[in-house]
Image 1 (tube, one colour):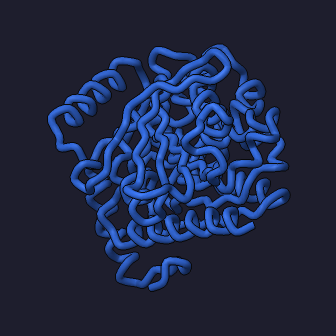
Image 2 (cartoon, one colour; image 1 turned 45 degrees about the horizontal axis):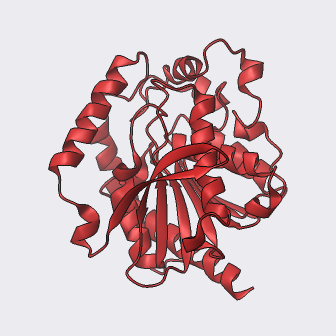
Image 3 (cartoon, helix red, strand yellow; image 1 turned 60 degrees about the vertical axis):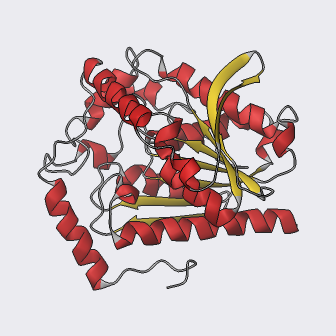
Length: 324
């Protein structure tokens, strides 16, 4: 099957449904205190320390560095192709704003580097267990301003694709909205690749109506988690952009490719954002059948097809920019 088509066979769906039955036995991710995320984060870092260097396995080098813009700074992890990069991916990892780091996306980012001949800059933003969400968003904006400005001499002139997953997709779109104040920087962004993001921090209808049996994410706890993320705010205040990107002015944003799962409590976030995005710029959206939150990490054919399709789309955006 060509990478520019996204179709699934009955056997693909059956495989995903079998995997879902395994997921049903696992605990759902929930954010109800600050201790649990800290424990998960410590375990993640321990596994990364004792694990193998994944980029080195593919004859690539990862550089962990700190970048600066307008008096602010943020750590990033850069993975470069072996030859000259044709473009740059600005990556925002997921993890509910409270767990994760730039290194956790190495597998996905290495695949993009190899398939698309891009460099990947993954942002190691501060986590919301210790940092207000507004400051987390400022970390993400700092990385974007650095990459898109002349301060980043290595990548000047290269097209940039912003990629985000889950909470990272929220941060990606919030960053794009904040960049509207710097039109010259925003114009360098050639596309946005967004996986099952959170775009309404007061909760979309699918969040509030999520059944207790939801997979991966704890359906009933989602609205509560969003309140913990934004203490002291009313729902009306939570729905102000860029905190809730769904309610921002999306004019001037680049073309987008979005994915969400049929079984994801957050599915309405993506579907509603795509509908609004399409009023200003091309936005392609896919609602995947029998798919839960986080599906691109599942060992299924559907996940492999989505990732291959995403990489092909990414390459097309870069080629269109460089040939114009």
